[in-house]
Structure formats: structure tokens, C-alpha cells
Length: 214
Ligand code: AP5
Ligand code: MG
Image (cartoon, rainbow, N blue to C red; front, side, top):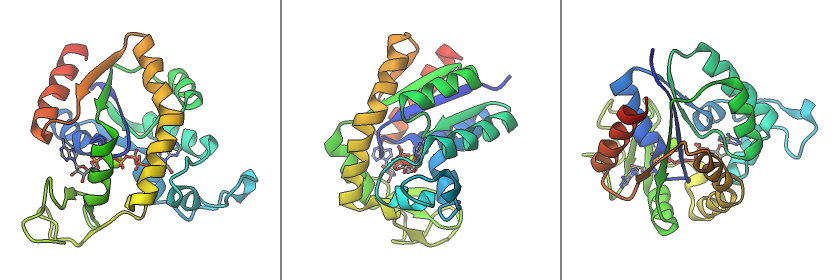
């Protein structure tokens, strides 16, 4: 049986970076609400009668997309997965309760990174528009600026990685998602990893934690 892994951490903590390693090592599905929503930014959710009519309007402001939309995405994806690494969910306590009713987790990882470091990581991130590989202009630069090392695709900057929106995302994280980290910590389920090390060092600690708990 493949492991069911949850990876928690602030925006820019390295969830996507380490999830890629987990997928390569364990062959699980990468279930990530951020990517799922980015692919569906223009989806019509006007029937919900909420503040905005598409996910993209929430995302570009750094706010959370409504639970009704996100819960359904996760439920479908987890149903189809044989082992997974879940990245970007749950982001508030209601989503955490919802997840508990949906599935059993083998490991809950938390990547611990200070806020000053997060902004630097987010504003310097570049993503391949073809294959989704992630780089950083200073910390993990591609061989040729603007070109993906993996597939030669063009690199772009995510719309929510401007300094202003990045800071708002971190604020939203502190208000809504930090309590989720406490929720798992209180239940004694949290494997805390120092996310300020190099990506390889973080991966060493992440894989150790998975081997210990799964
Ligand atoms: P989402 O896409 O989930 O964004 P996020 O949680 O803000 O996290 P990021 O993807 O920005 O960071 P990451 O931890 O994956 O970092 P990465 O590995 O790329 O969500 C986007 C939006 O969607 C939300 O704002 C919201 O609107 C909506 N949404 C999503 N889920 C939702 C939900 N459940 N409910 C409601 N709304 C939801 O690394 C960052 C950079 O750092 C990279 O450049 C990387 O190269 C570099 N880096 C990584 N590790 C290291 C290291 N160890 N040292 C140095 N640099 C490093
Ligand atoms: Mg990510």
C-alpha cells in the first residue's frame, strides 16, 4: 500500500518542491489544490452566490477560494489516488475536519520556514509553462535564464507571486492555516522539518520522517 502523506507549510515553504521528490520516490499522486485551481481559474461558480464568480478572482488577491469548491476537488482526487501527497489542503479548520472524514493519513509533514525567507522565495520563483518544474532566480536558477532545464519550455512568474500578493497570502496563512498546523500538532501527528535548509537537506529530513511514520 502506498502511503497517504499530508504536507503543510506556509506559501513558499517548499511544499511543491518536496512533493515532486515524494512522487519520484514513492510513486504516489500529487494532489495539489493550487495547481488544480490554477487550471480552473475561470470556472463559473456564480451559482454559489459568493463574493466572486470564479476561483481566479480569489487567487489573484491572495484570498482563499471557498471551501465548497475546494472540498469537492480534493474528494474526487483522493478517491482516485492509490497513495498521495496532499499539498495546499487543508487551509482552515473546516477543511481539516472535512479531510478527517474523507481519508486516513499516514504522515503529516510540516515545513518550518521564517516569514522573511518566504517572501524572497515567492518573488524569485519561476515555473515552467510546459511541465510545471519550479526554479528560483537565485536559489535554484535554470542553466539559461527563462528556459526550463527539464523540457526547454518557457518559464513564467505566477500572478500571485508579486511582493504585495505574496505578503497577503502569508497573512491569510497566519490567520487561517497556522491553526491547522496546531490541530495536527495537538494530536501528536506532526513531523516538523526545518525548511530553511538546502532543498536536498530538507528532502533528507522529509524522507526520514516518511520512513519513520509510514
Ligand atoms: P498554492 O498554489 O497552494 O500556493 P501556496 O500554498 O501559497 O504555496 P506555494 O505553491 O506558493 O509554495 P510551495 O510551498 O509549494 O513552495 P515551492 O516548493 O514552489 O495556492 C495558491 C492559491 O490557490 C491560494 O492563495 C488560494 O487562493 C488558492 N487555494 C489553494 N488551495 C486552497 C484551499 N485548500 N482552500 C482555499 N483556497 C485554496 O517553493 C517556492 C520557491 O522556493 C521556489 O522558487 C523554489 O525553487 C524555492 N525553494 C524551495 N525549497 C527551497 C529551499 N529549501 N531553499 C531555497 N529555495 C527553495
Ligand atoms: Mg506549491
